[in-house]
Amino acid sequence: MAGLVVGPLKAQTTELAQLESAMREELGDKPPRSPDEKRYDDGWERRAMNLVQLRPTFSRAANNSEIDSILSQVELNYHSEKVRQSLDKFRAALQAQREAKEKAVVAEVEAVLARVAETVVKARGPAELDDLVRDLNRLMDRRDTYEKHNLNERIRSVRQFTIYWQDYLDHLAAGRLDQAERSLQDANGVTPANMIPRSDILARLSELKKRKEPVRDQLSLPGINDIMAKTKTLADLPAAIDALTNLKASSKDSGDASSPVATLLRELTNLQVCYDDFKAGLPAVLSLAHVEGVNQSRAASLVLPLKIELLRMVIPRFLRIDQAPGKDEPLDDYIARIMQLALERGDARLIMRVYDLRNLINSTPQSLQLSPALFTLLAAQNQEEAGQFGPAVISYQKALRTGVDLVPAKAIGARLDAIKASHPAEYDAAMKLFLAQPDPAPPPSGNFNGYSLKIPGSDPQSPTPHSTLSPTPH
Image (cartoon, rainbow, N blue to C red; front, side, top):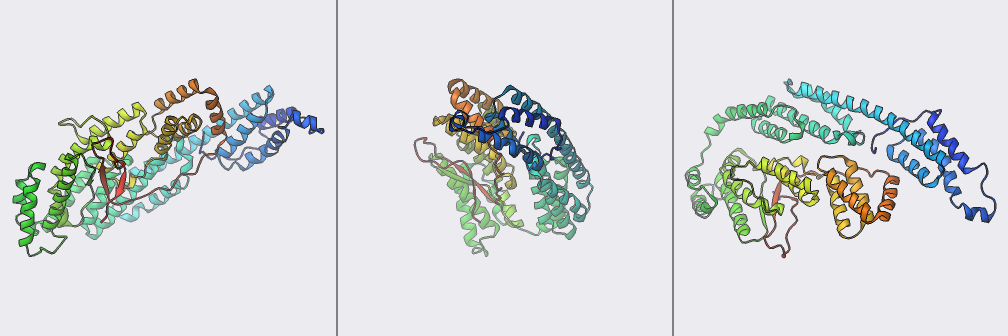
């Protein structure tokens, strides 16, 4: 059980004393004296060192990996039945202590998350959430204790949601309606948090839009609505681009790159380029970045139906699969269906692509750092395909140990069983190495603001970009 910090064991723990006694009995009272004796038992020094290090390790109890490592060394270096039985009893006692600690930690986390959910919905000002953010930050500092119960992602999501909500309340109180709307949309995008019913957030967004209508009524987009009314499908893009080009040339704001006409023309041109490249079987890029500003956002929103139409076309090639969304199938349902297929197959590459896509569609850039478990699973599949069965076993086990939902445990179990059956010696050696290794530190997370969907070319023999996320230049 990796990751959970346990308190130091009491020095007089019965199971620990019994284990030390069994180790001393196998070790003997005196070291071998003659060269022949040393050659006969060249592991005596290692066993003696294990005995010396055992109690100090448990007194420190820095982390589970250090404790498990010393126990694995004892298991490898000692061979008597008495040591084995004492080791089993001690591990059972340790397991009971860890489970009690886990239960207490999980209860504490659940209590904090419940208090956050209760407080956020009632908060009327940003200051009311300061204590909650501090509590969540404190939980984040102990993130290595939550791996088994999948609490890491929940804590991160709830913390991010609370910060967005605090920003929303602050902007709302100051009358910054555009910023309040953006913060509310950001909070709505943190779907794993599940803090407030989505209908409540949508109602607040609707209320914000009503409050902003008097401002928007003063904004005019001459000629744009007429042009877009005729632009029903992607086939209508060339005519719309020509009409907008003429409108921009005759506009008094023709040199303003941030004007609604210029914004809409840029959006349609990007769609046309992507559409043309896609039809030609070339690699293509579909920008899904947000557009800033009220006028620009309003103009860009006119392109949304066309962007969704193109998105539904390019998704299967992005995912490298033959299954396209059904005619009336919502994109969220399609993505969930393909993710389930990827998990059933145990296909790490497809899981990663679907994970990328899901975050892009839901506009959640804060969630775009991929789970380390997926990279580990991908490494395992690459190693197995390369015939490196020992490293593959270790990577599969590391992926399993993370306990995240994106790791297909059943499929990994089947691969490990297959390797064990076909390469038993390499499997056994790898498992000993895996059990003796400490857990690695969590990798640093990344954070970007805008993203594009990179669609590979249709020719599988030609070089194609990886279906990963890349920052979109602003």
